[in-house]
Length: 396
Ligand code: PMP
Image 1 (cartoon, helix red, strand yellow):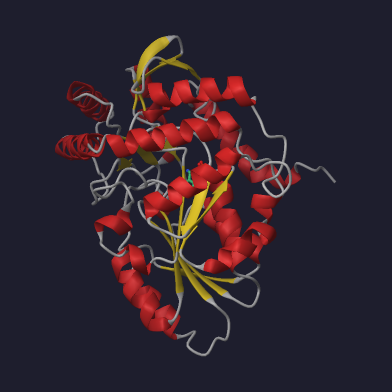
Image 2 (cartoon, helix red, strand yellow):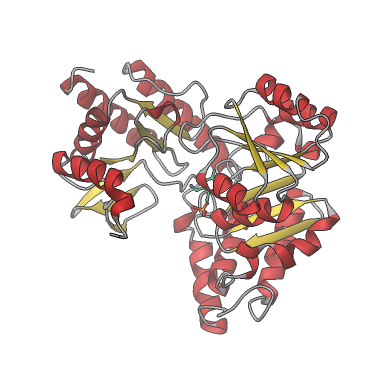
């Protein structure tokens, strides 16, 4: 039996895509960043509109200095799991800072945001429980669900009525019910009605987990995410997120007021069976968190930039999502069209993410842009002009 036979379908789509595209969209190399908003791609300065570096903090001076100093004094890795030799004082310090930032009792830090979802969901529910997942949930939420063994029920994306209908049917189910939603959806930039979900979970005796990966540091007066904007933080049982977007480093977290999480450290496999974050990353993350707290104006600038890109693309006749958020996705109809459009943007100095089905909602391809506080208005206007010219060229 050919071990790769199972990839035949994927192989055919991959070969088809790479045969028609002048470059492989899955092998773009950012040779090096020049600044938060510009990188060298194919030897040329290219405007970056496809990173998740919302506040530009991957280039934070304070974070860089903290990382260098910590690497020099502590070395570059922990060589072990959080529950063995991989907890340094710094891990505890970061957990205390995040708990304080989110005004929660507890925080667990994971090695990635992916693992934070996997590790939280799989430790909270098991085969006797039910997970209610927004249909457009990130892969890490679906993978966490699989690892948990819980029964999975998908509700219609961002639809409180559908969620409530499904929860009502579970009235006599003896297990725990955990609803999972995101703050901002990574592909479309849609914002979840978390306040409505809080109301529903309270009436049905369920728990609610929010993945604020794309909204932490980005939304809310203090950067605590969509729940802060909607004034419903107290109703969210578990908030999960990542350092790899607004803070510009790597790692994930779960914060909560539920005391039961102390044992999660001993039963969450993606937390236990992997090496902990290296000390220089923790130091950089804490410095970036400070930067984020000291510079609320970054969030104002980000919001203005998001509105500028969103309205610019709409005026150019392109189909964007309904919500204005730092993820601005242009929907196209066919994969061929999207691949050609994406190549033309890159050839004209604008890098965005090409997102293809089945990773996209509605099975339609997306050109996913992410806006940064570090973008200048001129850079945004330039990107809009390039989008408009490419759309005209392709007769869209
Ligand atoms: N949740 C969501 C909604 C995401 O978009 C992502 C990353 N794309 C993750 C979790 C995983 O985060 P990380 O890349 O930091 O592991």
